[in-house]
Length: 122
Image 1 (cartoon, rainbow, N blue to C red):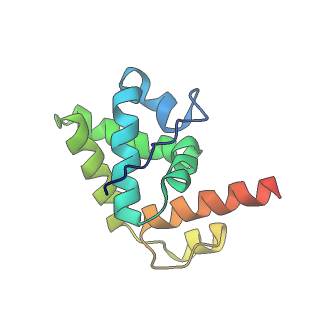
Image 2: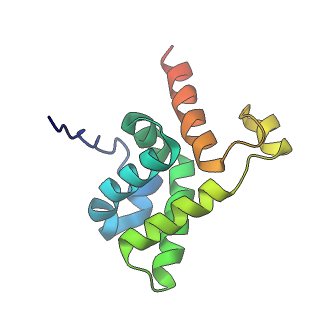
Image 3: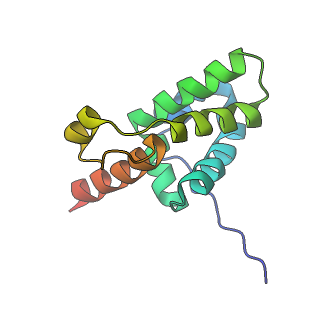
């Protein structure tokens, strides 16, 4: 039996990834959700929290940079995902955010955003 997970909708259409992607947001959202979840092995809801955050806006900036360089949308999202996975959490970022040093940047911020949202809800 094959099951497909429902892609969570944005809860922040004014800014974050969705707001930054503007007219391309509806096409980019499911592609980014899936690409980030696959790359980080994090659940879709955690990815949604990340994309709705200010960090998601920065991720969208990198997707837009790839689009402006001539890539198609899916390729731009893939390239941005690989770029963020290639960066590592350094000493200062670890100190500022409590993310373990050396973790892939994208993984670290997806997890960080989920923890930050959970702590606000508590």
